[in-house]
Image 1 (cartoon, chains in turn cyan, green):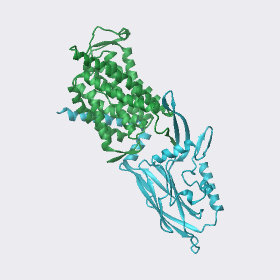
Image 2 (cartoon, one colour):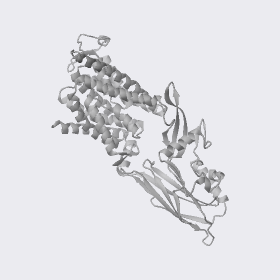
Image 3 (cartoon, chains in turn green, cyan):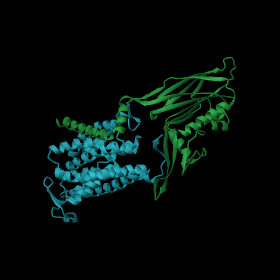
Length: 258
Length: 307
């Protein structure tokens, strides 16, 4: 919680200290609730938005660049490294990534490193290389350099699963001030609350930002089974075992006839 | 057709999983084994986490062994006294196994432990079965009886105290090796997600000299109870049993098992054992290969917790 508070304070500081905002972002998400049902195979959400002058009389300053950062519920994950020990491959070393997003998508209209300078990107945590991924290192925890082997492996593995991604084509400008962002939700998407951060740049400077949110929830039967397994483990196990016996018995009855 | 698995948290193709259930069920029916040693690696291969695979397979084995046990029961080929004796220690073994499973999962070494157990058990048991059945086949070629039954031959196991008589199997042995075997099977089953049928059958034949007539039926009853209790224990402690996945596997498994049993009954015992030995050995080698050969990716991720 304190970490969030610090981050929020930091964001407030940037916004306050930044140039006088002359643009305003108005965004709308196609769907604020992604329901994971038994036929869920992934989904694509669309975020539409316009850039409006603020106040209305002030001039617009195109061309604009837009970055949409979507973060999933926080998780702690351990990255393990295998090494050959006595001829076999064993996990020998591991790092814990503390409270990192389970889903992280950085969507933009062109590569993020061409939108602003590295310092700005680092400060605003824009791009997979710049997003804060704190690791536990001994008793301490901190984010390491971006080419730390564990950090790289972590981002690579999450990317392979489709959970982390950086796309320089996912945001398209329909007119110089109207944009559309495609947010991919893969089948293995974790359930929980997602934050969407929309940041507008012009000439390498952040000029406006807004945010939105969405929820990924299990519904119906999926929800029921997952809850039962977690809350009533013993009963759930007994029911599963009974189901096994019933099916076994049923098969023997059917096939005993012929 | 894709279906989302609520515990494994990923979608799978229903027909693929059903097909896997059928294929493994066929093999299990044919050889009178649970088939967990085939199913668990298959599930891991399609992307289900090893822990969920091990926990879920136990319920699948419970279903297919119940079908088998029922048909053997009708043929009066189940030694219920022997099964109960094996069970009394089997439950203890399963509980110890589930406990160790939970501990190892916390230590990040579960995958390694599962890997090493598979390699050791499968290659050793597979090789022993190949050797034994090949010799039996050679003996029949030379016109001798296939099974070398020496009723008088006693091992040191027969000298142990607490002797009991098992009527259906017509054996008179000490309770100690019976308990030991039960414990080992329960323990190994819980750790590796296998019923242990392919271990139990040879153990009963070679150590206790249980006749072929009752060995498979008895082993199935044991497998049934250990796997049903492993399901309950895994669900209660690790919350990793995926009922949807289990259901699809079971349906495929019990149907496959019925057809497999018919094929198995038409085959000669020693040839069946040779085939099973080869299968077990091959799966063991596959695991050895994975442990020894440099993996494509040295890094892997493990979920620790949310928030």
